[in-house]
Length: 254
Image 1 (cartoon, rainbow, N blue to C red):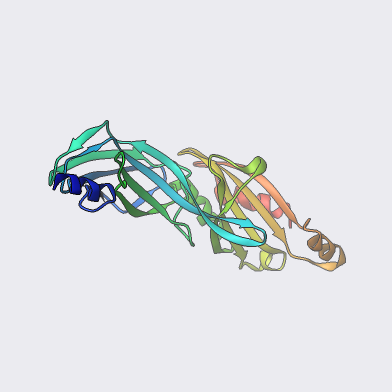
Image 2 (image 1 turned 180 degrees about the vertical axis):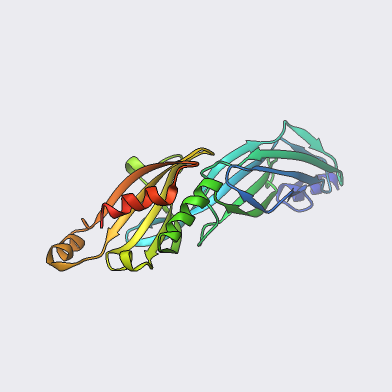
């Protein structure tokens, strides 16, 4: 009977199971995540080589004019050393880790989740998946609010594949796309895109993509040639007049 139980457990039938219970489901980027991983033994004793927690998100990659939804790991943590879980035994392991400050916020189609995996040799690895909501850091939230107070509406938020000099720690960048609502911008700009390149508690480095509206033949030609956009790299520090600083930059390009 034990032999058949081992065969069944190797394909996931009657094997150990895992369930991750988080202290909260909503977090701010850079905040501590805490919880407990609960392992329940199956019909037989099984050696657990390790338990891994992996923080994942999704992003869009364009390939041959079609958009694909990709996933990538942001952080991976090994919780423990090898141990054995006996049949029907329960085992709980507390954990905590700090979210990266550049974890994407869960707006638009962006999702963030914690994937828990038991590493069991010669068997299907039991897993668990827990989605969490991510809010921007306080400074990032102030920057986004300042842009809206200038007369812009947040229209779209996407994580898109990145390459070249703007790529940072991950294979994507999160873009916040605003459309102008204030009269002084509505007739001069098509949109304003904001990307957070790096950030901490005290500063944020952002990329402003200022897309000017076509006015006159020269502007129409610029738009046709995709040269109607300006890219401005800007560092904003906590405590400085954020709205004024961003407004001064935008006004230089309209």
